[in-house]
Amino acid sequence: MSNANNNRDLFEFITKVYKSSVKKSLEVPKEEIANLLKELINTHSKKYNLRTNSAVNDINYYDLKSRVKEEDSFSEKLIRKDIGLVITHKHGRTVTDLKRARVPIINDLKKLDDIIGIRVVTELKKDCDNVYKLLLDNISFLEENEIQLHDIDEQPQEMKNGLEIYRIKGTYQDHICFELQIKSKIDEAWGEMDHTIFYKDHTSTPIKDTVQATMNNIGHLLEKIEDLLFDLRESDKKFEANNPYNAFQIKMSKELSEKLKTVFGASVDLKEYTKALYFLKNKIIKSKGIDNSELSFEHLKYEITDPDLKYFADAKSKSHKLIITEGIFYNILRTEDNKFKLKQENYNDSFKRFYSYYIDYLISDVMELQEFENLLATNSKFISDPDLFINVKKLKKFISIKEHLTNTFEDDPNARTLLTNLFFIQQYSGDIQTYLNSVLDDLEFDLSKKILQLQKATKELADSPHKKDWIRDFQHFLEIINKINSEG
Image 1 (cartoon, helix red, strand yellow):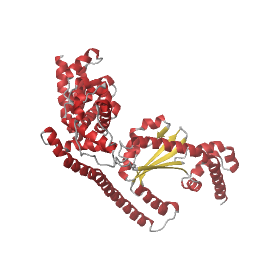
Image 2 (cartoon, helix red, strand yellow):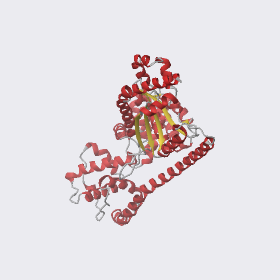
Image 3 (cartoon, one colour):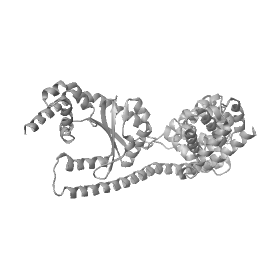
Image 4 (cartoon, helix red, strand yellow):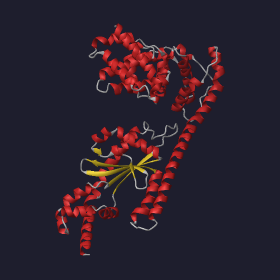
């Protein structure tokens, strides 16, 4: 009994050390860890489907919570996890011994694996998977900011109730430990109930195993509910996105079909235009409809003098789709400001605004603006096809192939850049022969060998079902490049 009393005194002293010298000191690193993780997730949330793309407002499918372990929970853990015994065995069996070892005890307490708790709470379990993928793909960012996630490759873990959880051990600045959990809202609520019934009170009853089995069954039912909720959410997103768009499409067709037929002497299928126009409208006059009482193509008589806009202007002149989209864009500007009148004096500025918004539409779900502009700057002189500014599917295909090139030539940026440019030019019926002639003399590698390497890497993907939509086109491209290179 005296030994138990002695342990109690020792544990009370350790708890006092925690309260007076550890708990408060961990608040700052806790906030730093939480803020770094928030920054990372916020930056990439759209890419990993953790944020909606609503035209009205954005909704995050995640929240982040953080805490430093409370004193009562800490005291309980000293006993439940034998941490108190480990510390006393290491630093002394009397309070006097522990007082002398106060500093090393403080350091040890900061290294308890869940002394700081960070929890990412998501709407649904599928969002947990996306948060986990985001973290896996951005380990370098975490490491650059002194965050190490030690067992991230061993996730998710199976709990006693048979369900899975993302529970990741981490350290910050090499000496402060924390635990990162990723849970859905349902998992969080269910975990607290399970925890309350079977953990906190430490009781044992003859029916505990039976009750636990029932609880486990409920947990598995909740997993099925999660799947149903995810399906509902996706259906709701599609309805919210498509319903106003469908109404817009019908309205545009009713208001403009006859006017366009009068102007061009033939029927125009506005379905090809409305996605771009809907995007442009929501950028400028989100809450209004477009005033299409008039439809003018007076912009065709004005001249573009800005050299930075010449290439797009030339492409537009070869495409009825771009000509019509531009004309309706000025209706959007007139709806925004009823005093707006297009003239030669303001045409370059108005056209520049059209270009800016239209390119945003074209690439918003495909690539960054700087990447697109770099591709244009390097390759536009070899391409005259207006499809470059029209066909979003081609851009998406290009991104898939660019990723393939990046993976194949990860350590060879020169080959990667050359072949990326070649495919970009070829995809838009450009002059790849002239481009090749302009760079061949400066090549520091054997292009034939790179083509063979790429053919082999592409062949290995041939059976991948989600890549079949571009593999055949890419193999054809490689045959063309190989032939041109051989003849050269």
